[in-house]
Image (cartoon, rainbow, N blue to C red; front, side, top):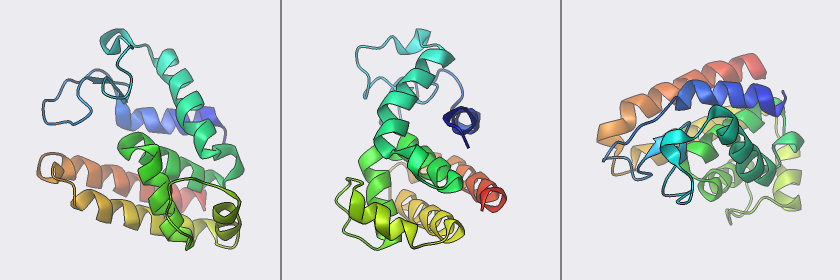
Length: 159
């Protein structure tokens, strides 16, 4: 799957402009938050500008093009929703290496020894478990659970 395909799936979750006072990211558009990008005019952010940010700051840092397609999408979606280091730490737990938040050769080798399906299922399980412990789970948990359920459906198609 290309970055374009992954991005198109992600945008199905992220949508347009929101300024929810219960969201720790604050003002958000296309999933890009003011907290993470304080110099960006979030309200006027275009889909194409968001795509550039996602490619540069998420996909490239996650080395998405080196992972199996289904895993790359799941990790990318988790990183966008919860932060890159958080997503990588939980993925490292899935593959059985120290969860330091930095994807390197040991993590990649451990991932290569697992099936795509196992990584997808375990990553979704870790993600759901992580999210249920967040303080804003009562306000946003239903939407997050639906998002992960949709990702499990993608996982079935991808693996």
